[in-house]
Length: 121
Image (cartoon, rainbow, N blue to C red; front, side):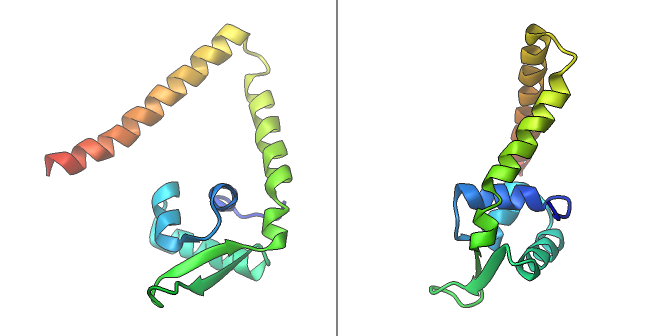
């Protein structure tokens, strides 16, 4: 799909809610500022997004999908569906369900760890 690693995540977040600020995208994907900025610059050069200053604060950049970016919805959904099918191909339904539960528990623990660390400061 001619995307660099991580750009699919940014696209998915924008497909869920177009018009996010760069800071909101940064927070939602959990990557550092320079990585997101570089990815968005490349995505803009590829015609997938446009960045423009926010009306309330010209220093804040708002990211919008272009028609080309919005057209990535189905190819991205197909890619994730294929990845899911391949990932669980050799697992029984019970083992696949167990795996998903374990993965969600690990994700929650990681997300809660950063929240707990913030609260303890």
